[in-house]
Length: 176
Image (tube, rainbow, N blue to C red; front, side, top):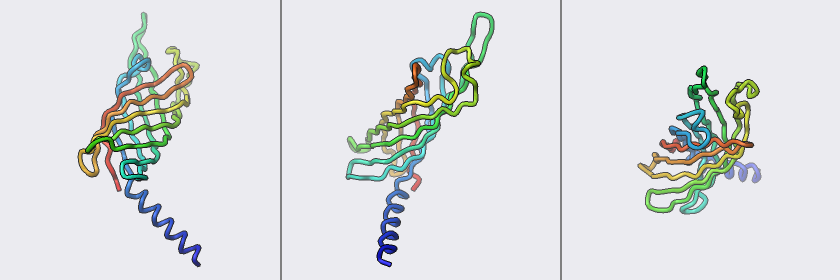
């Protein structure tokens, strides 16, 4: 009975801590680097848990979805659309309060390509099917209200021989 009560207390504490730190982010993404040749803009959506572990430090994890629609590319005798790129990212995150209202965050993890196109049919010379790679994202956040943060981030997915890089800006909302 004592073990059951102890388990119940631990579960309640973990649930209460986690529930108060659930966040969702939406941001517009602007391609930079090599990827700019194949896409211009897109969006990123993330859901994360960021519980406090110290007065100015939060540690947690995030799951995100990055969509980069392909753009029209003109060749000498025809025009074709580059394939859209879609990634699901899983990352650990650390956030630090650096000044009143300002926070910095670093996400490190892995991104999984979820495209449904065949890379061997591509005329673009870039990997486009189920390409997975190392994901990292330094971020700057500003606390607008207790529940809303403005977000500016650099996001990169390092693939074998090609990197997708975007600058994104948006908002993060603390849901619970």
